[in-house]
Image (cartoon, rainbow, N blue to C red):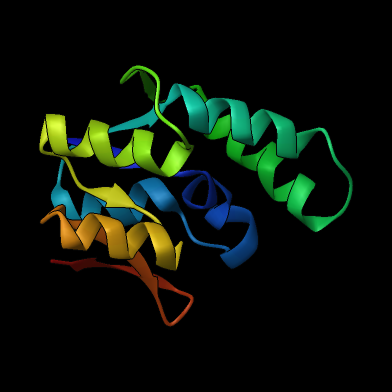
Length: 124
């Protein structure tokens, strides 16, 4: 099963000390993590900065090695890119972004989000 990760999902291991891949396997069994090309650009940009957010992004960049990069074409923003990719592929999206979560749920896309800062949960 392909599971799309947004930028903040890639940063969860550093920020919340969770093993993202273990949590995804717990929820779905065998998974193939994927990101959009826009997420790759965002995480690289954030990793070039300073502070905790940049450190989290650098940890997230290490996860990119195990991800498939999907290119859904041009969209006005990364959130729309993720939504289009998820809708086209019928795959869930891991995010803590409230705005993106709302967009995805309104389109009937399964969302995986962090609960109690320690475990992932599936939202429909």
